[in-house]
Amino acid sequence: AITKIKARQILDSKGIPTVEVDMYTNKGMFRAAAPVVTLTKCEPSPSRPGKESLQYERSELRDGDKGKYLGNSVSKAVRNINEKIAEALIGMDPTLQSQIDHTIMDLDKTESKAELGVNAMLAVSMAACKAGAAEKEVLLCKHIADLSGQSGLILPVPAITVISGGKHAGNNLAAQEIMILPVGANTFEEAMQVGSETYYHLKAIILEKYGSIGCNVGEDGGLAPNITDFREALDLVKEAINRAGCNGRIKMAMDVAATNFCIGNKYDMDFKSPDKSGQVFKTGEEMAEMYAQLCTDYPIVSIEDPFDRNDWLHTKAFTDLGLCQVVGDHLLSSDPKRLERAIDEASCNGLLLKINQVGTVTDAIEVAKQAKDGNWGVVISHRSGETEDSFIADLAVGLATGQIKAGAPCRGERVAKYNQQAVYAGENWRSPEIL
Ligand code: PGA
Ligand code: ZN
Image 1 (tube, rainbow, N blue to C red):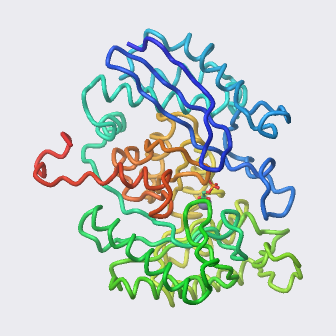
Image 2: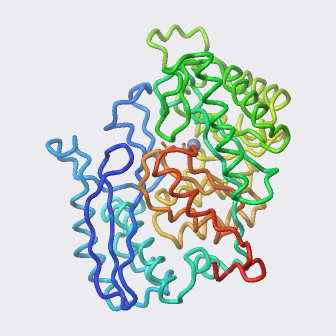
Image 3: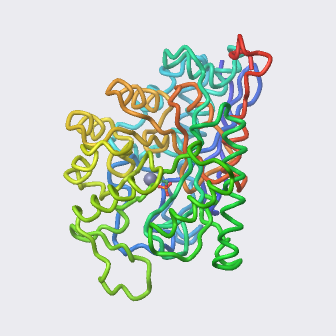
C-alpha cells in the first residue's frame, strides 16, 4: 500500500521549476518528475508576442509570484500533492493505476485541471505507476503493457532530433526540429548507434560549413546552424546520413510546429529574423506544395504540425496526398475531443502524445488507444523542458507505439530516455518480459 507521498520543487532542463514526487510503499521509494508545458508567457522567446500555447492542453499550476522564478515557482502544486493528493491516496494499492488516477482527477472538478495542476497530478500518477510495477515485481514497461492490455513489449524507433530551430533554438530556421528515424536498424541498440554516428557526421559537416558557432545546440540537443531555408537543413542531414553509410536505412522527419509562425492565415518562414520584412510569407497552399516537393526530394516519412493548430483544412488536404505520416501535436494537444474530430475527418494520421497535456498515466493510455483504434500512428514525446525521468521510454515500450521522440543523442535529460530504452532481449530473447 502507499504509505507516504512527499513532493518538492526541482528544476527542469531549462531551469524552470517543476514538480518531483517520492512515493513510498512497503517495497521502497519511487520517484517521478513532471516535464514542463512550454511557457510562451514567461520565457524569453523569439516568437511573436501574444501566441498562447496552452489553449487546448490541461493547465499546469504555477504560483504566479513574480518574486519567485519570475512567477514560475510551483509551491502551490507541491502543497496540493503533500496535502490533498496524499490524503486521498494513502492506503491505496499502487497496482490499481486507474483507481488512483480517477481519485486524483476527482479532486479537481475543473476541465483544465488548473486547480490541482496537471504538473501535480502527473508526477504522482507516474510515481504510482513505478510503485505499481515494483509491487508486481515487473518492469515498468511490462506493468504499463498490462494496464493497457498490450501483450508484447516493443522497443520503438527513435525519432532523433539532429537539427533544432523554431522556438527551440536561436537560429533563423522556422521549423522546430529535423529528425532522423533509423527504421532500417535491426535493434534499438543499433538504431542509437547509427543515429549517433549520423549526428557526429552532421556536426562535422556543420563545423566545416558554418564554423564552430553552428555547432551550438538547441533545447532538445539538435544542432542549430544559422540557416533559414528548410532545404539547406535537410541537405545537411541527407549528407550526414550519406557519410554514415546509412542511405535507405535512416529516414527523415520534421516537426515544423507551424503554429508558432502562422500569422493570420499565412506562414512567416522568416519569423525569427530581426527585420520581419514579410517577404517570405507563404499561404497554406504554398506550404503544402513545398512539403510535397520535400517529400519527393528527401526520404521524409513523417511531418508534425505542418500547419497551424487550427488549420484543419490544409492539414487534411496535405494528409490526403498520402505522402507521409502527418502528426498532430499543437493540432491535437493530446486532447481526446480534438483527436476524435481529427480521426473522424481524417485530418492527419499520427498522434503526438505528451503526457503532461493529459494529466495521468491512465488518460495517456486511453488517448493512445483511441488513436490506435483509429489506425493511427502514436509518437510518445518528450517536452523541450524535460527532467531526467525516463518514464516516457517505458510508456512507449509498454504501449508498443513503435515511435518515440526524445530529442538528440546528447544532453542528459534526452539520453536518459534512450539509455533507459536500450534493453535488448539478447539471451532472454524468448522471455523479454523478465528484462
Ligand atoms: P515543446 O516541444 O515541448 O516545446 O512543446 C515539443 C514539440 O513541439 O514537439
Ligand atoms: Zn511538436
